[in-house]
Amino acid sequence: MVYTEIPTSVKNLMNTITEKCESHPRWAENFNACFANTLLTTVKRHEDGTTFVLTGDIPAMWLRDSTAQVRPYLTVAKEDQDIADMIAGLVEKQLGYINLDPYANAFNEAADGAGHQDDHTKMNPWIWERKYEIDSLCYPLQLSYLLWKATGRTDQFNQTFHEAVKNVLEVWETEQNHTNSPYNFVRDTTREEDTLVNDGLGSPIAETGMTWSGFRPSDDRCIYHYLVPANMFAVVVLDYLTEIYTDILKDTAPVERIETVRQAIQTGINQHGVVKNQANEAIYAYEVDGLGNYSIMDDSNVPNLMAAPYLGYCSETDPTYLATRKTLLSKENPFYYEGEFAKGIGSSHTPENYVWPIAMAMEGLTTSDKAVKERILNTLVATDAGTNLMHEGFDVNNPENYTREWFSWANMMFCELVMDYFDIRIEK
Image (cartoon, rainbow, N blue to C red; front, side):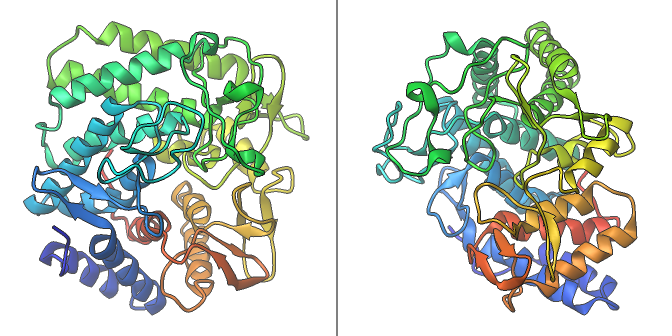
């Protein structure tokens, strides 16, 4: 089943936003287009009660993207049981996919063998792509938690959930020492960002307590493999699991294991993830390898360093975060671009001088400064190339040049920033 019309609860929120945007009519125009687009074009509800969410112009579901795509609907799930059911169905689908293969990042709607079946890794017909990314395991667990916070619902913490938690913990424990890992990944390609070096095992690393990631949330390979913002996200999610098992399920059996992994990762971030920038200030590195190598940068895709407060890892006023943020929004970040029409963070995934609406929205979502939020929203609606929708990336000197006509994650990040500006937020 697909949505053929907008539910009343969603229309009501769209009307509320439209009223609040009286002095910013373009915000409302784009919000309504983006907020409706995700429901009408990407959400598929199956007869078994699960939900499949297309990323947009690629006919597959990413565990990361699908969570971000429905997240703003949590604000109406409190009053709309059907929307809550749709989100719960997505959680069940995501967790089922994790149990199918916790190393995969994107899945097919059916076992039809679509996607990158020729990659040299352990593929099966359900998997679209098997690039291992820490955040692919974080996002579904985060969504299950946020659904509880928004609605009080707990039926998502079922046997599928318990099995997924065990699989996630096993992978994160294994990848604390990647030499023990069963995972490797090679793609026959001329694009080096799409494959891992060293026969698919990745570049050398030393144990740090953090957990290894093959790829970034951009689906581009890691260089140093301890992806600091993804490990931050893991710490937050492990805290969620402790709360779920202790306060909701009253089952403390898994808690010691959860806390052990969490403490090791946090210690690793503290000991290896903080470096000095050009001004000799302590900041978070983007990636490290435990051997002394690190990168000072940020990527548009979330989890990134900019998103640390949004994820719940730290306060937006934390001194190390503020120094990091200042560095990321400067030329010290090789993916920070400024041009005639926009400024912000781009990605190795798109051409030079292309900034991403996702990154711009995240910049706004991690500050209390309404003037910054307003500036970013004005820029986003002015650079949509007349489509009323967001894109993956666009040229800071010519917004008519952009990537991905239909990219639901970007649409919903814009919506979340509009909501945030008017103090409508997802409960954490």
